[in-house]
Image (cartoon, rainbow, N blue to C red):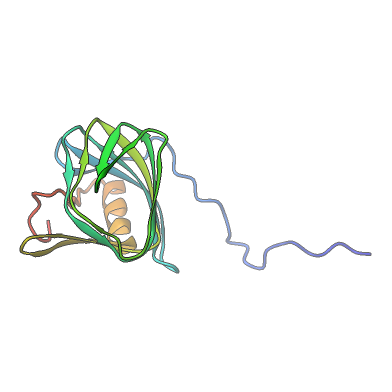
Length: 158
């Protein structure tokens, strides 16, 4: 019996490799950075590494899809709990957060199935989805800063 043909129809399929030397994008000067690992225009999914210095506070936000967080090092105050290195957190679609605080210098892997809306007492301050992340990554690769703060003290659209 002949083997089934497993060759892909789309010969453009390939792994996406992000090297360690890829730039970190500074999102809040001296306090917060991200490294965009992957964006998926077909689904809206995206994956990024976040690096926050102790004391950094991300604005309240709402997940418009589910998300996964894995803390690589440090500690994060998330709602009423603390996530430490090695902890995993699943956040369902629609979860509403207060501010998220880095209790120590922290790095975490974030896998998001869609956009996140950031807000303050006056309204929406930022929208973080695959398109904006792709723009930020392309600007960083071209050596042109395109920062977008998600800090609690960020002005709308910054």
